[in-house]
Length: 159
Image 1 (tube, rainbow, N blue to C red):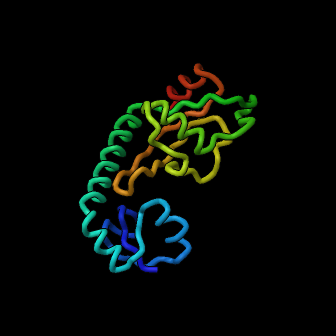
Image 2 (cartoon, helix red, strand yellow):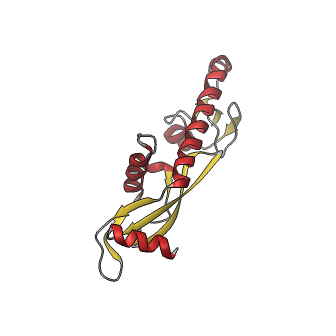
Image 3 (cartoon, rainbow, N blue to C red):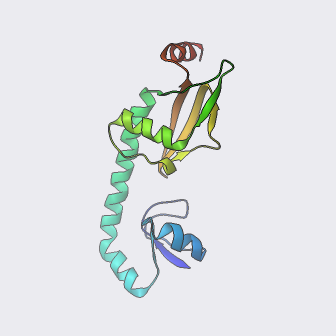
């Protein structure tokens, strides 16, 4: 399926015409407003609204950069119950991390699908996570998973 990108992504920049599989376009790109189908009508509509898409892109870059500047100065601290050997009784997943980040930035801008985790965190420790708020801005954040506040201070001192 041929589509017109309405947001920058791995596929290309705003306005690029790319070919993707039908399911990817219909189930992800179009519902998330990252693309529109390529038709003559949609192409005319896109050209008329191109400046709006570019403005939205600039706003999302600014938002990602502001979140990056806040997170570079802070650690995301998550207190969870764990055994004496450091294994968590549950796990820390992207939903919990997104909730903590939103508390830190005093907003509701980060969703669970913006956080890249290879697998849920199941042990106490320091972790680096990637946030994908915009393809042009790479955000690395430090997550500290511990049993108590005093353990956090000792972990950060040893790091």
